[in-house]
Image (cartoon, rainbow, N blue to C red):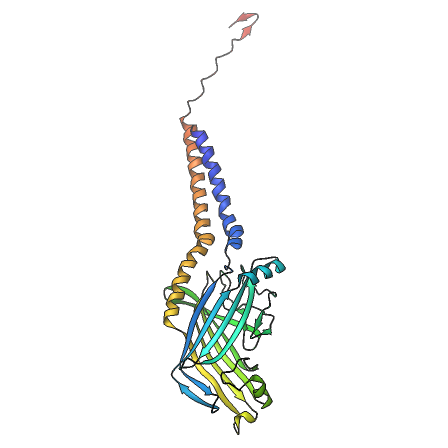
Length: 333
């Protein structure tokens, strides 16, 4: 019975030892992915801020500027793009809506972001765009990959429609989570005007005809939880200007918007709570179950060897064989 039990334990030991790397290196890359129906909203505020009054073309100090960022998963578009690309694809229809202290619209920029559900690499299908302009993203946007590494990444900037390095600056603790801190600085760059302007009668075309151009610069900061790749906090030191042309009178430039944009406290708390729960699911596949199964396999192997050793020690020794009679000269001795 002990020998049979040791063989059963040995079989289970091999099973769990083999299951551990399969979970980490085979199941995890296939199971960890962004759902196509994801929906997220975040509110950021710059308080105080400088904002251009398009009626007088004069910048003024305001108490607050709010930016509402919405990410909505487009399931039909994701299925169509996934069939074309031959992999799991997520399509996010994003909107960045900026409102002044009176709640009136300052600007709104729609985007479509198409990416691989597992790696977060951009997928060039499904009509990716920024404010209706077709783009071809290089690098990540909004989210880092699962198991984020301590290195620089390429990050897409929607204003310039280009990608640039976002630099890993160190590891910190944020609200009880270990996070990686990243920074990206976009120098002053000439950018296109939003297609939707805040004042009736003022259009991108009238601004261009006046010989006026829009310029932009920002310092972008993210605190990223590395297991999920989700930013738990984000800030920008954001500046926009109009330069040149007859629209500004005798001025060379005028501030359109300037402020230190920070995520609102209630959304920080909500994001941290959500990431803490999602983090456990990723760790279950990458650490807890693989390590647990490996330890269980080793324990079962040790138990099987122990039972086999005890079984051998408990067996009675074999009786000695009877001596064979010897014959000498035809007589038995």
